[in-house]
Length: 174
Image 1 (spheres, one colour):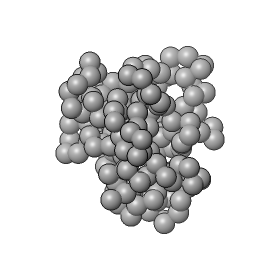
Image 2 (image 1 turned 90 degrees about the horizontal axis):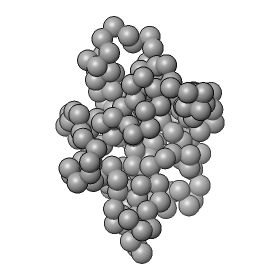
Image 3 (image 1 turned 180 degrees about the vertical axis):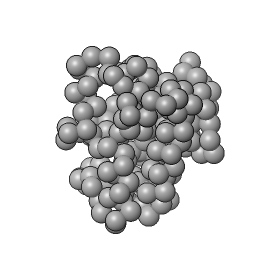
Image 4 (image 1 turned 120 degrees about the vertical axis):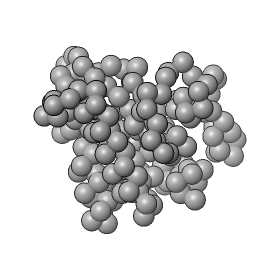
């Protein structure tokens, strides 16, 4: 699809024309949803950055984890995403919880402009992937750290006016 940037293309007014993850939610993409829980879906990442690499994301378009910190319901959604991710990973890899990691990428370093939580069953498949999702990196935030910050009323992610403008068409900001 032309004009696709970070998995999303926009109309002239900034509204969403197409989103890769929204197309998965609608069944219009070859990626298969493995599990649906309310307004969330879980599917396997094409990146396969670890022994198990799955994504939890809302079925409706939410731009990024910044959307969560800009809304009072954000902590609740992040908590539900993490809970469902943990539940799914325990079903998939029973008893191996010590080898798991749950992270969000911080914009602008996110790969797709649709909120998603990375759920990993370690080890990572290469040094590249270990660095890409390293929790000490400035482009990654560990899910529990992010949720704790939101619950304390903090805004752990820096947001520019350009990024803030993307929130105009975000369903979570309405």
